[in-house]
Length: 486
Ligand code: ADP
Image 1 (cartoon, helix red, strand yellow):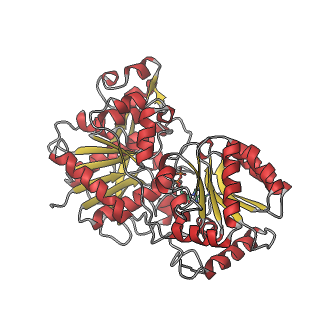
Image 2 (cartoon, protein in one colour):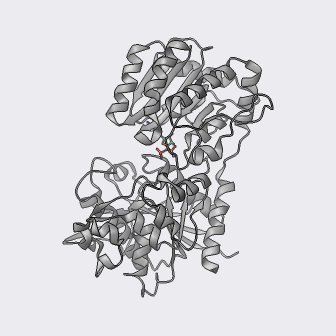
Image 3 (cartoon, protein in one colour):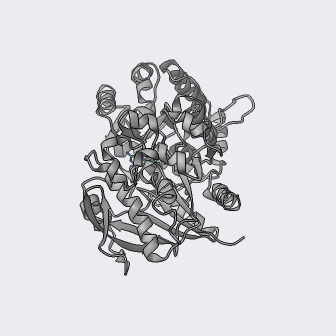
């Protein structure tokens, strides 16, 4: 099969910038597509923090200080490049300090939409300058969702780009990038309203994600269950009709796990490694974790871990009722690492004050602690209201840290409820989005934990799961080839 030229665009790509699962996935797509033999080019904005941390970047000749007009402003952008670690993939960064020299990757600044329109336009312009004619542009989330429309308008008669196809992957349909229709001139289109959703236009808004869904040649999302959920019901967050109106249905491809980073046999963040055959290191990690978080040193007590954005999506509301009561009735420890909504921060801080021996809360983003929580906890809690794919439940399985998950999205596709009689299953799956359901799930899992043979079986089942990218990446390959032969 001939190799394809692929161009991947993402607002965050590991190892350069990460705020969530999008970075993990984009950072895995790039080397794994290359491993299939494709010619891969990846683009992301050059945020100031990335620029400061990466001395290996070098300017790309011929793509320096190019003008880029967005609405009534003229920006200048340059292209910087490096090899994606461990590969010969060209990783390109759009350097435009006026837009990306900010304290955070994402902002609430009034020009936020411009930052990503500029990223999208600058990527297309860079391809032109580089003489790069990709077969496929693979866009991710709302940030780059205008690219499919640009291919069909601004670049429709471009000799280099007019034949390119576009894929849009939705990592989380809750983020749509909605902007006021007053910003229409920023799109750079003649008669923009003729391309945009009429209803939105009438309501004074422009929806980048919806535009992408409408004009992309293929739309994918990150698990088969989430693909169904966003087409069929409220989890589509207003996109159900437009998704269902597509000629080709949304394709659900479960994310993979990068076991180079997330495997207790060789996790670079751990000092004690372990495997299904030798679990002694797991206990050592639990001791380290307990010591690091100053919980009462009771290693036999079941320890529940959470690593999460503290956002409504993650189901923290369910815990408001469930956890205080459970902590009074049952003997378990709880360790939470996360940042986000002050309401949830206050909740976990309050819980840690009330149960200081058994509850610890760490506010912030801490990659090393996230790995130690996966390695040292017994149970991982993910009660999400919705979860497009979710990565931590899959990481947890590999570390023998039994996931408690709600039956939604990628959680449903990756965790199988344990049946103590048959000994089959990998975690605890609950259905209803309410406090009694999560209480039931935690109590059930603690009951399993109390039976050493049952728990051993559950851990062995969990650790035997394989969600490697090698299995998943071929599904993207099939998709691309199908699109090009259609
Ligand atoms: P989402 O993208 O919705 O946040 P995912 O489960 O898909 O959720 O991916 C989250 C990723 O971000 C995981 O790799 C997880 O370990 C990481 N993560 C989330 N919060 C933190 C944190 N506070 N510290 C370290 N890593 C975190």
